[in-house]
Every structure is written in structure tokens, then in C-alpha cells.
Length: 190
Ligand code: NI
Image 1 (cartoon, rainbow, N blue to C red):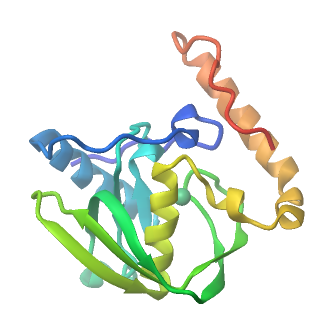
Image 2 (tube, protein in one colour; image 1 turned 120 degrees about the horizontal axis):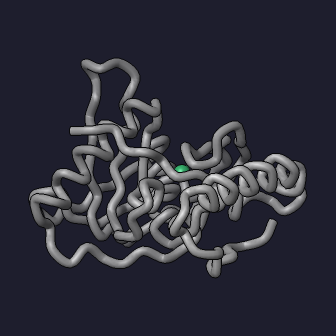
């Protein structure tokens, strides 16, 4: 297994809709294992494939991660949120692809998700609290949506400076990465 580089805000893959995983192959299993290792190395509780530059519908999550002994990683392939609670609740979110930025987001407090695991087994899971939060945040990633897109406009406006600095940094890094071609995928403006 290996730790993969996490792409940063402004990278096209973060702003695009991902496609379903057609077949759960060894390559997909290896990718999921690498993503779990990458998530732990970054001290995250979730990581979606677009964050490592792959636009496929796959994310990993571990909301129990506190100590190594209590780790409980899960792989979600082609996830679908099939039910959500009427009640919303606020929580201050962050994202490994948007370092140094946090913000309050309201989301349903409970969800039911349907997905396949890395062995191709279909499962349904009812989640609440932090796990429900992570599932929604990561599912958003698969649709090119970031938590900042769900913040109240006035609160997001306060982050505009930080976000455009980060975007500029990312675009410069991508530009320096040679054959990247001039960014046709402008992404959303802030
Ligand atoms: Ni994120």
C-alpha cells in the first residue's frame, strides 16, 4: 500500500462529477487500500477518489478513527444516499483538499446509504452523527460539490481571500507540472 498525493482546491477533478465504477477489479481494491492509508496518513476521517485525482464514484471513511486499535475503515463504491432525516444539524467541516479552511454546514443528521464494498458486496448502512456527516461530505465530492459550496453565502464570503490564494497556488503548481495544457476547466469562481 502507498500514500497517494491529495489534490488541492482548484484542481479540475475536485469540481467534476465522477462516473460509476464499472467493475470492482484488483486495481480498484488496491486503490481503495491506498486511499485508506492516505486518509490515515493525513489524519482525515474520509477521502473521495476525486481528491486523489480520479473521477470515479468511490470513497473511504472512518469516523471512529481515534486510536489505531479502534480503526474501522469502510469502502463505499457507487454510493447512493437513499434516505435522509428531516432534521438538519450544523457542524464545522473541513476538507483535506482545502487545508486551513473550516466552515459551518447544515446537513441531515441521519442518512441511509446504499453502496458496494471492495469485494463487490452490496450493503446498506444507516448512519448518524459524524459518520452521517462524512458520508454526505464524501458523496458531495463525487458530484463535484465541496463543503464550502454548502456554506451560507455571507460566511463563505469571509473565506474568499484564503480560497482564491489556495486556488492560485494550485493553478501555479499545475501549470508548472508541464503537459497539463491551459486550464479549459475553469471550475466555479469564488
Ligand atoms: Ni473533503
